[in-house]
Length: 115
Length: 114
Image 1 (cartoon, each protein chain N blue to C red):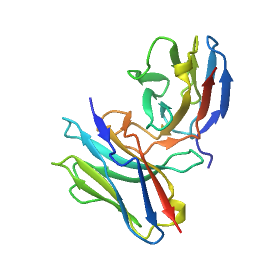
Image 2: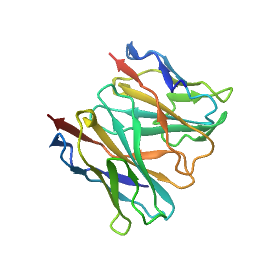
Image 3: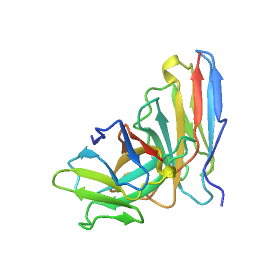
């Protein structure tokens, strides 16, 4: 079956612009996660959805970052007024059911470059 | 807050030999899960092995096994009979029992040499 997909694979934008990153989870997976991975570091948690609702958004760095999952499937991570420090690979992952130590299935990521 | 530390930024091993990657973590939780994920150069991360904290028996998956020392908060990964395809970055991760998010270490880059 299809894995987690993310679009675009690469995004180059200018400082101050708005960007949207999309994640298509594995069909039927109710949990969806967004992480940010800077060069040479491990993924850093941003937000976790269970169904349509954000169950934990404690990792969002500030109010420029926002994510939605309106129908409980596809999710969009939105970044306003981008800054050079936002440059990173944004990873999406999904898992079936409620947490409890389930494996997370990762997408290939979107590489965001802010000039 | 939980922290995960991987003290070996880079390691190398000869093909067919055994290598151990280290991971330590800090938590006050009693119910949690530990993971090793592999991220090949193409970037998509995949699960290697998973351990429940309440289980004393170390998890094994074919050539991959862990040494889980709960009291010492240590969770190392042993790769036996290393293969060229094992070349990747390896991440240790911690998840609290009822939580969704995982906390990752900064990774160990493993190179398997022919």
